[in-house]
Image (tube, rainbow, N blue to C red; front, top):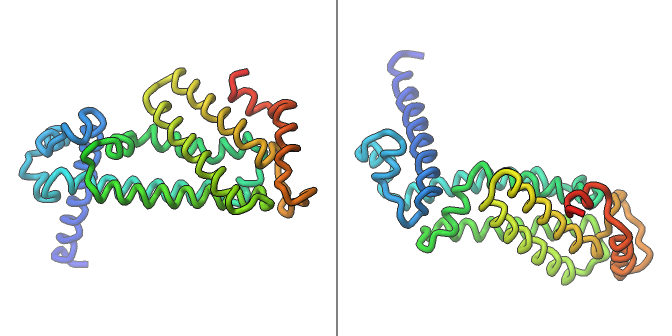
Length: 242
């Protein structure tokens, strides 16, 4: 390859590095100041570049927020593709909850800008719309997981349980994000305990074989509830703090 061919490639690589630098700076600024109070000047200053350099890549703060949100959503989609699997659905309930929630908790801890953008009262409409699509996709995956684990649940039951579980997790995740260290760990344990105690009567607590045989068509809610009352597995008991 000639030197003339290499030059455009080097310029493209430098541009990609600069964009990544600006997005990382924007994430820090959004988390510190919130989206509303943030500015392109603050982002450029955080990135260590001039405002003119920033404007070579982004026309305004909204464009930066949209690009940052798009990248984070792509990473989140890759995460939920790894956790909502039939194999995880059949795990003992405490391990299932760990397998599904831990990656999302870790993701949000590593990328607090996600919540900072969503909670901004004047977040760009594109950001809000994309997150609504993401949430709908996540809710659908939770519903599919319930179908694998407890096929006898009716469509209406699955939808209701999925919505309640997802809403509980989102609310708990907000609390988790507000704390650090042991306090954060305590909220994580309580969140998992809430999910365990809510889900146990519907989907049972033990591992599920690939072709479960159920005693009736009701979902065996009463039997599962009795099992939950008799005591949770070690992992979930530890999660509940009791």
